[in-house]
Length: 235
Ligand code: SAH
Image 1 (spheres, rainbow, N blue to C red):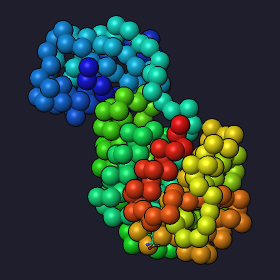
Image 2 (cartoon, helix red, strand yellow):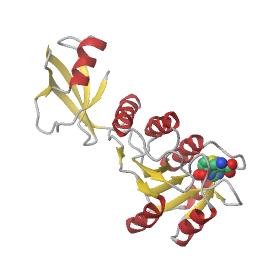
Image 3 (cartoon, helix red, strand yellow):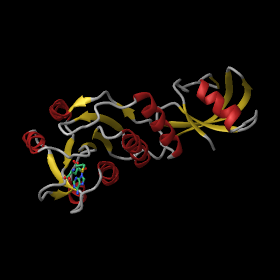
C-alpha cells in the first residue's frame, strides 16, 4: 500500500482532506489511484492509518480513515547523526540511506576539513520523506540547522546521551564493541568529512567526554562510515 507522510494531525479525523500538491499529483497522476483505493497515511505521531479514497479532485484528495495502529518499525535507539557536510550527491545519499537504516535526526556539521559549507535543505527534506515512506518508518527524521563542529561537541553534552566520534587514524575501540556496552537509548554519532577530523577536533571531543571509535582497519569513505555506524547503533 502506498504510504504518505502528511503534515496535518489525524487524531479524531474521519475524512482527511489532503491538499498537499505533491501528494495530490502523486495520487492522481503518478499512481493513478481512484475512489475506493487504499492509502496509508502517517501524521508523524508514530501511528499509521489506513484510508480509503472517497474523492479525487484537482485541489485535493478526500480519504476516509478506516483504522489506525502504532507503527512498529521505529528503532529502539534514538540516533542523531552529526555528519560533517560532504559533497552534494554523497550528502544526499547519507540522508537517504541513513533514514532507511533508522537514524532519528540529522545534524549537518561544518568541521575544519569541510570543503562544502552548506547543503540544499529543501531537497534533503524531500529525500528523507521519500526514504521514510519507502522504508515504512513511523516518524520522519528531522534535519537540524547546520552547526559548527566545536559548538556541536559542547552542545550535545547537555543531553545525557552517549557520544561517539568515528576516527580512522590511530587505535580506538571498535564501534561494534562499544555498541554492546552502552546503556543509553540516546546516541550522538559524529562522522567526519572527506578529509577526516583534525587531531585538534578529536582532542576537543575527548575533552568533552566523547568516545573515539573505529569502524575497522580500512579507511571508509565518509558516506560509507555514516551508513555503517548508523546501522550498528540503531539496533
Ligand atoms: N581523508 C582521510 C579519511 C577520512 S574518512 C584520511 O585519508 O585519513 C571520512 C570520515 O569517515 C572520517 O573522518 C571518520 O569519521 C569516518 N571513517 C572512515 N573510516 C573509518 C574507520 N575505519 N574508522 C572510524 N571512522 C572512519
